[in-house]
Length: 113
Length: 115
Image (tube, rainbow over all chains, first blue to last red):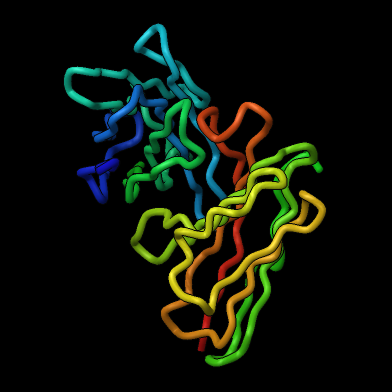
């Protein structure tokens, strides 16, 4: 079955520390992969996406993600977290032949000063 | 419009009442999606419209839920005889001619509270 797993429900980091949010997927076709961020009371904003080509993709707000086919992973990283990055992060997967994205359950990021 | 617009942003209703939630997608976007986000949960797919095709209703949790899309633009999600478990944030998204695989644009959501 197609699925997306975000193993970490809640992560706490100090401002300035590095960050990695995990995402694993199970998908029969070649996946298209996405990371969205949701700030409190807001909708979801697209951070970055991977379709093909270079497996390291850059996104907005200084985020990047790396697609590792052998590990079925698409982890999100940021070298230095800012307090404004506190939010909920969702990984999603789709494909060229699908009409819907499948979302993970999200990881809530808390940033301490 | 410039983005996906949802209204109302918040709705409190009494158990048993009907509610209507509205979504105005980005102009020209042919695909429109409704998702539900319950506290501590991920996004639950509800329904999907693509152009003039029959909608994909496979995610609607019960027959109390229905949605329509008029003129290929605005969509209304209706919940009849609301229950407390319907309390959630209802998110609408749209995608352009390239389709869903290239990502959605989400609205800010409607927070529904059933008391």
